Image 1 (cartoon, helix red, strand yellow):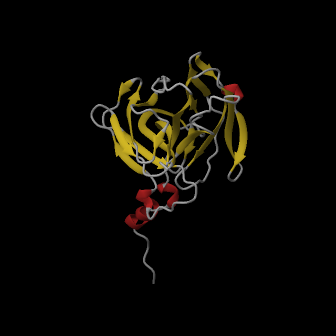
Image 2 (spheres, rainbow, N blue to C red):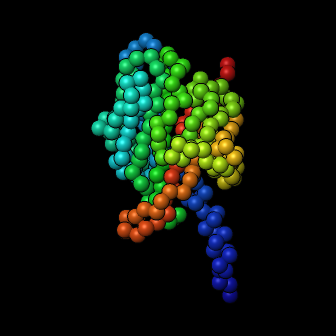
Image 3 (cartoon, rainbow, N blue to C red):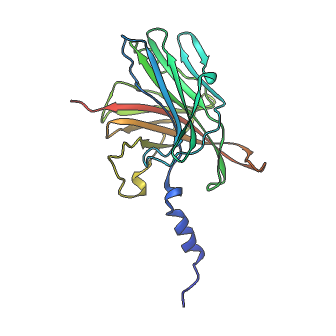
Amino acid sequence: MSQPITAWAAFAALSLSPSLALAHFQEIIPNADIVAETGDHSVSLDLTFTHPMEGGPVMEMGKPVRMGVVSPVGNQDLTKALVAVKKGDGKTAYTLSHKLSEPADYVFYVEPAAYWEPGEGKNIIHYSKVVVDLGSGEGWDKLVGLPVEIEPLVRPYGLWTGNLFRGVVRKDGKPVPFAEIEVEWKNDGSVHAPSDPFITQVIKADAQGQFAYAMPRAGWWGFAALVDGKKSKNPEGKMVPTELGGLIWVKTVDMK
């Protein structure tokens, strides 16, 4: 006669569930992090809420609260330029096309709508940004002023594979001591993680909120600094915990 499942066994089964092993990342991926000075100077961006290292699944995105870019002309609101698209199993994602006006570094960012994650019993809001350069090399360290934000201490483009990326985690403009940062590579299907700990790399900031990570493979890397926010309502109107994330995306290239 089979024995009933113990509470510990049930907990272990849930802990090892693939759906719980995956970290949420709000992607904001441009078609190029360095735009050629010749041509029409346009850049397109793909906004998807997913698990990048595992290649999915894609999660439903509500209409972002705001989408913008910090450039020499100031902080421009690009929310109306967002176009909804369907991905994965018909889940909503967004795209955007923007023409760069002059040589400069452009800091694109998004404040997504809160995502209710019933498996974790919390709302998730990941403020994400990426820097695109047009023949400038200046302005890459400008802060957007997001509630949670990573300030890059290394220019976040023109990076070789193996370079060390460094940043400061800030909440309301102030460094966050010992903040936790999750790191994932946007998998192109060429890498299979041998076990769950390889899917999401986890590092901690120091007492000054600074962190560092050496990126071992070419492609896009997402750094997600996670902090607790104020409780907010879930779709049923119940007050629940809120996870705030400050994300930055950087690209590495193999030296050939």
